[in-house]
Image (cartoon, rainbow, N blue to C red; front, side):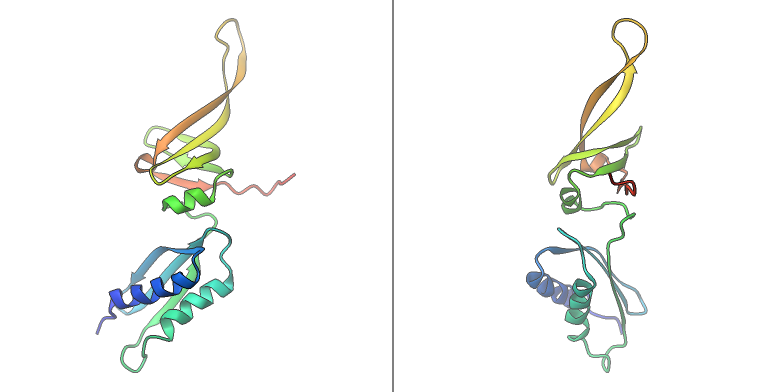
Length: 158
C-alpha cells in the first residue's frame, strides 16, 4: 500500500510553520515508500533543522500500518539552484549561469520571483584604437531562460 503524499505534505508544511526560514526544494515518495525530502533555508540549514523535519514526519506516521523509510537532507552546495527563494538567498555571490547560447560567470546583484540581475567585468576591444579595456557588464535574465545556475564556491577568501 502506498503512502498518502498529501498527508505527508501537510506534515511537512506544519513543521515548516515552526521553521519559517526553511523551505522544500525536493519531495518524493518512491513506489517502495521511500520518502526523500531536500530542504534549504534563508540562512544555513543545520543538522537540527533536518532532524526537526524528520521527526515531524516520522512521529506522525505508523510503521505498523505502513512500512517506510525517510531521508531528510539539506540542499547541496554544488547543486543547481531551482527556486526563486534560492536566488534571493544567494544575492552578492558569484554564480555560473548557463543559458541556451552562453554561460555567464557573474555576481548575482538582484533577484525577484521572475528574473535575476548579474554583474561582471569583461575585456573588450577599445572603441577607438588598438587593445582592450575592461568594461562593467550587467544583464537581467528571466528565470525561465536559465538552463542551470550554480553558486561558485571560492576557497581563496582574502
